[in-house]
Length: 299
Ligand SMILES: Nc1ncnc2c1ncn2[C@@H]1O[C@H](COP(=O)(O)OP(=O)(O)OP(=O)(O)O)[C@@H](O)[C@H]1O
Ligand SMILES: [Mg+2]
Image (cartoon, rainbow, N blue to C red; front, side, top):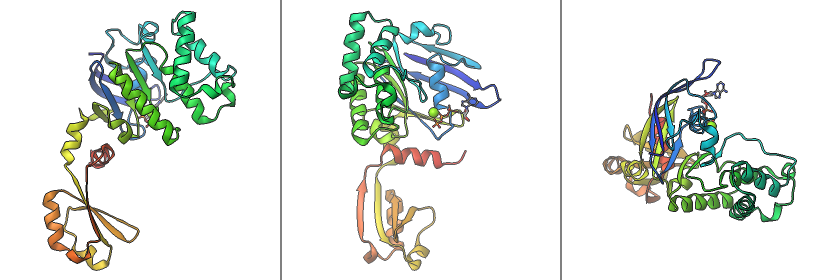
């Protein structure tokens, strides 16, 4: 196990219970997504795993170290992208990354090589000489991500790496993470872009109000939803009145869209006027669908 968390509780000074008994184990070269609504405790969990915060209760072991005690040692082997971070605004992009590589414990020569590598990885070549303060928000995020990737990390803790990035950069980040996984790096990543990371992630942990409500491999979670059969029909009053109870549907722009499993399909087809169906599509549900379904359940 690369990360092992047992009975983790975090109560902030003002009394907020951010984590309320979390157990989590992450294996070597696993890409584990931590998902959950705003305020669920994702950032708190990552900050405890990186040693930035001390837990109120519980045991945390990361690379066989106690993060709260051995933080400096841990950070030489772990790359961290916090949700909120500070960059050295008065350094150039090059200076920033070179300096942080040195802080990470690399020799000057290695630091230079690593700075160059991450600059290329995140396509920052054109801005290496610019002051960090002069960069756009998205470019700053890429610098922060580049910083997290410096060195030979065994574990990456990435808090919302996709936020603020344009679609092309998001795709690039997804590719980088996928490559790292191929190299045996373990990744714990929080994201609301489940579909993009879900394509190659191994497992998902869903947090809700400081508790793990689900922890399963991505393919198991997707398999449970089966297929989505989407039927589109005009949303007239008479049709609305005929929809069988318990069927999932939504009204959008005068159309009714159903999400059906096989059993519901038969019920809906027999209740509706088949002639009214404008289109029918079968789709593989995405991790986003699974997440929404899970989160919308009560509790
Ligand atoms: N420094 C703090 N002091 C007090 N309460 C805090 C502090 N940081 C976070 N919290 C609270 O702890 C809970 C969990 O917050 P956390 O930032 O871990 O959630 P999150 O899942 O990362 O949310 P988001 O998706 O918005 O990033 C929230 O109720 C939040 O308001
Ligand atoms: Mg957060």
